[in-house]
Image (cartoon, rainbow, N blue to C red; front, side):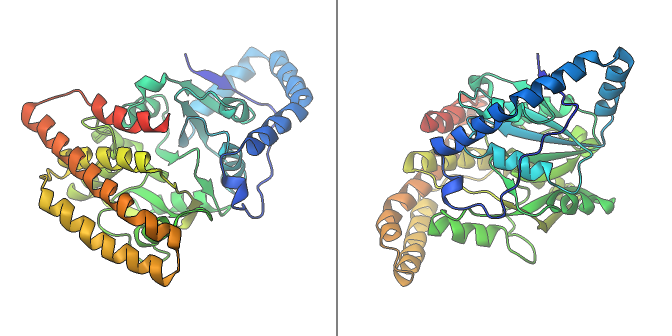
Length: 365
């Protein structure tokens, strides 16, 4: 059963004026600081709990009804996010729009993630790590809220403006808009190729490239249109891409909102690059009916090698230059392997999508 945290007094962690490179690293220092903050407020927490217990039943029922009728719900997914979730929740709690219900879906955190989250007014849904299939999990979470607009915010996505949420929601003032997503910028410690990819995918002005249809680290959709087309579950990944592709091909409008600014990126290891690209390839077989071609993988590797080596040389990034051949080989080979497996599943009508899940999760152990 979902656990619920309801605080009579809202406790707000301060949002740092600037989030440094060191503060975003996954270190025990961040986790210790978060726990220290919780311990210092244990007395206030106890007082707040006593106040809740003294509340009358009609008042509690009224609060539950208000929660159920919120027009905006925010769904946040987490697993072992203690290194960053304090920043994420503090930034969210400092937005100039606060009339929402926060739903946290946690898939087996073993660090301080849930302790930090319990400091905020949120509804917790806990699932087993092996049950985490993105499309399925999101559909179940949306079913448990009645909001008109559902916002998605990753636990490692830190909003960088106090009006990021407002700007995202303002897109829905246009009744033709069915979904909107924000602009992601990479963390200060992001690798050079990551920064380049983010600059291309999420421009400061204009529209994103065609392959970015929707991006759920920070996005929102109208619930009534989700009811028409829930997130797909054919493959493990790219549920946002598939939903955006469906909306576009169905004649609906989506909005890219650069003013809905957030920080979100990953410096993947080679194992993690393989997992991500494998499931993206598998998903593209289902979404775009794309066929696997070894020649395309070889061509992509060659072009990427020339482009990235040149960029690393002119920026004098020796480490990035040395890492480029192996990264690009894994990047393109994994996508080809995933695409081939996706086509095999379609051809043989294989419903089991656990291969993609293993490809990703086994590389994060």
